[in-house]
Every structure is written in C-alpha cells, then in structure tokens.
Amino acid sequence: MQITFLALALKNLKRKAFRTTVLVFAIGLFVALLVFAVSFTISITSTIDRVSKRLGADIIAVPVGARTEAQEYLLESRNTSFYMPAALLDEVQRIKGVRAVTHQTYVTSIDGLCCDVIPTMIVAYDPATDFIIKPWLNRAIGRQLGPGEAIAGSGTAENLGLGLLGIEATLFNNRFTIVGELEATGTGLDNALFMTEESLQEIIASGLSPLSKDQISVIFIRLDDGLDPDYMGRVIEGQVYQVDVVTRSSMGVRWLTTLADINKIFLVTVSLSSLLTIFLVWSIFTAIANERVREIGIMRAIGARQSHVVKLFFFEAGMLGAGGSLLGVLGGTYLSAQLAASFALMNSISAGLELGQQLAIGLLGLLVGGGVCLAGALLPVNRIKRVEPLLAIKDA
Image 1 (cartoon, one colour):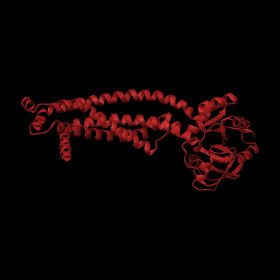
Image 2 (spheres, rainbow, N blue to C red):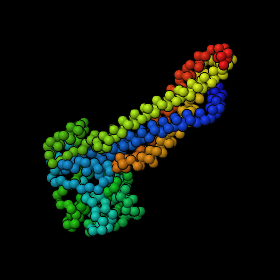
Image 3 (cartoon, rainbow, N blue to C red):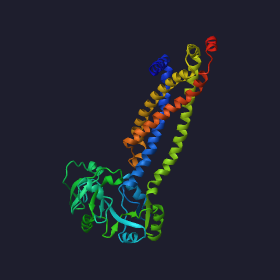
Image 4 (cartoon, rainbow, N blue to C red):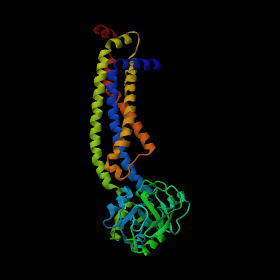
C-alpha cells in the first residue's frame, strides 16, 4: 500500500513539474537560510566555549587594562605583549579558594633583527606548576621540554613550514631546537612557539628581548571544587588590585554581544521566511486540492477513506519537503563554509563547526523544512478530505 501511495504521489508531482520545482526551491531557500543562521551562531559560541574549556583554568588573571588584549590573543591569535610583576603569583595563590596557579609569559619574535623565523608569539611556561601545556606535551612528545628546546603549536608549525623534527631556529640570538608540533587545540595558543621559563630567562639575559627578569603575562587559576568563578573573580580583583580577571563566562563577551545583535536579525529573517514558505505551500496545495476535487470524489466513491486521501497528499507534501530540505541543507552548509569566511567576526576567532555539530544542524534543517511543508499543506488537505464523493463528481 505504501509503495502504491508513493508511486501515485510521485506521478502527481510530475504532472506539474514547474510548480513542483518552484516549491522545492522555495523550501530549499528557507532551509538554507536556517542552516546558515544556525551554523553561524553555533560556530562562534561553541568556539568560544571550546577555547575556555581547553585552557584548563577557571580564571585567567592579566595586568590591569589588558583584559581585551588577552582575549584577543587567546581567541584571535593576535600577537600582543602585556606584563605584570611575577610577585603577583604569590598574592593570588594565597587567596582562599585558589587551588592551583601557573603562569605564562608572552613575547613576540622580531624577524631579521634577532630571529631567523617569521614574527611569532613565544610562550614561556613553568614546568613545575604548569597544568595548561603539560597535557598537550604528553600527547605530542611524551615528555617535558628541556633547555634549548621549543615546540610549535599546530598553526605555527604550518606557518614556519616545519615538516621535520629537530629543526634549529635562532630566537633573540639564542639557538633552539624545535622538537615537535602540538595538536590543534582551537585556541590562540595554536599559533605560538613554546619553551620553558628557564629558556626564556636565557633570552632575557641576552638583553635583546623587551622583558625584564621578574615579569609575566598571565596567571591561570584553578579553584576549589564548587566555587563560583564569577564570584571568585571579583574576590581576586578586590584583593589583588593590579590584575583584571577573565572568567569562563566572560570569555569572548565582546563577540557574544555582537552575535546577540546578529541573532536578532537572523530570528526576524528566518521567522518571516518560514511564514512566507508556509503561505506559499498553503496556496499551492489549495490550488492542487481545487484541481483534484473530482479525482478525490472518485477515489472516495470507490471505497477510499479520508485517511487514504490524507496519506496521499501528505506523501506529496513529504516528498516536496524532503527534496527542498535536502537541497537547503546542502546549500546552507556550503554557504556557512564559503560565504562565512568573509565575516570578520568568524575569521577573527577562527570559528568553525565540528562534524557532529554539522550533522545535527543538517538534521534540524531537514526536520524544520519538512515540518513547514506539512504545516502549509494541513488546511487544504483537511478541507478536501471531507468532500462528499457524489457532490464532488457532480460539481466537477
């Protein structure tokens, strides 16, 4: 029975090929807009959330006034430098509720003057306290870095054209061996060159870097279980007045504020598009129902029930919805991958979707597109299923 209904529905759609094509493309355009809008939103929010989680800290403390610069580096990979006294580490560590702290120091290499690599952010960390870089190192080389060694982030390795291990580079007139490449983390640290604090002190001793001995850039903070990072952030700023803090909830707040405004535009546009698509489906199925009153009357007269009429029309609506939705998912996915590259907001934080997210958005597009098509066909189908067989044949 289902095969018969499917074949009959397909035959009915082929009878009006142009009308069918127009409706499929209309549904496809709506679904493409929906998929693009959802992809745009999720790619940015998930990227910011992914960065905050992969950093492995509840709170990041930076010098006063450097909150924006720190987020720009961690999210946008912008080379930047900001420093504060290393003594602040002890002050932060003494605050009740702080479980562990570690620090990083950032300095940018200078092409040609002291270094034989392109300008790159150098990140120095303390192996004794580190809980940020250590997990990445274990997966990459299975050990800590030694004196005179550095390891490249995934983006830095690509920029430097590294294809072999054991490459030597000069940084501030100090020779370093680049011993490997870290896996991509989705953070700004992918575009850095990592070394230990001990190696950085050798660079400082050479007198060519802008750093002094007792300066650091950021403090990564882990809290005791159950503590609210937002509350503890205010406590830290209150007790250590020389730092500003970035919590997970405030990571990327500037981008999220901009995204909220864009989402309002998307919401209005998608809502209007859905209403227009429902209206178009309703109009076309009303015309189809009017054209086939006699046909439905004959079907009813020879024994077809109301459920058979509904099933036939819903097969047609379902096929239109599925075809248009599939076309829209493909188009929307392509737009999100190609057109979105021109959006400065997405480029600045290297926003992207994981495969599971893309599949979920595609499924959403299929369901919504099919639902909109069925919703538009509901009223005309509900009306025609009630037609009296003899009156329909006589009037036609």
